[in-house]
Image (cartoon, rainbow, N blue to C red; front, top):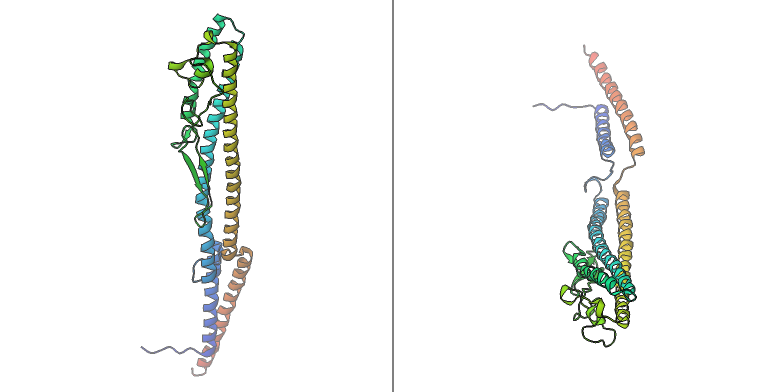
Length: 296
């Protein structure tokens, strides 16, 4: 097959038109995607730097979900603490009323007291979130990992606040020696088997019971302060993670995003150049036809 020979002027105009078409296609792609770097072919250094930043942002975003779940776990525990605190203050009010109540009134108050007291452990046992309960076991632990690239994490150790006469660190602790079977002794373990009998209790035993409840409330407030401190820290870490992710994504965008206004102007200029190149190619063709006409 014979080769087609093009004149120098036509070849020059054709190459110029091809380059202009290529630039126009690249500009149209940037306008369509909003990015000036869409693959390693466009700019290998910028592409992989941006990818590293985006991957890091994605990893931190995954950790944000874990932090949010940890906050919910702590809030569930705090809800349980607040419910127990409210119940204890009701129990304290009942004991204060029973000190000066008649025998009949004491019997009614005794029923209220024992009914409420049996709810304490039930509230503590129900204060779990996704199977984790930080209030009924000292072996429970909430661990929040903040990063894959460091050992940054938060450990929250659970507490055994269940009402018990034998468990170390339980909700109620001994306040001096008391007579066996007295209110001050029975108030340690609220259950049907060891319910408190108001009618056999002296005023001093009511006072001891109130003192034990005050001690339990103090323990609860300490626990609530620990939970609140951890929630505050996790919220701070969550805010930091969000800001950090925004910074990483912004840095990635700086490397890859196109300036839409600039690319739009480029496209208009390239379209103009295409029209001019076509006109120049047409003029070059006319010159060759003029030469051929000399042989006609």
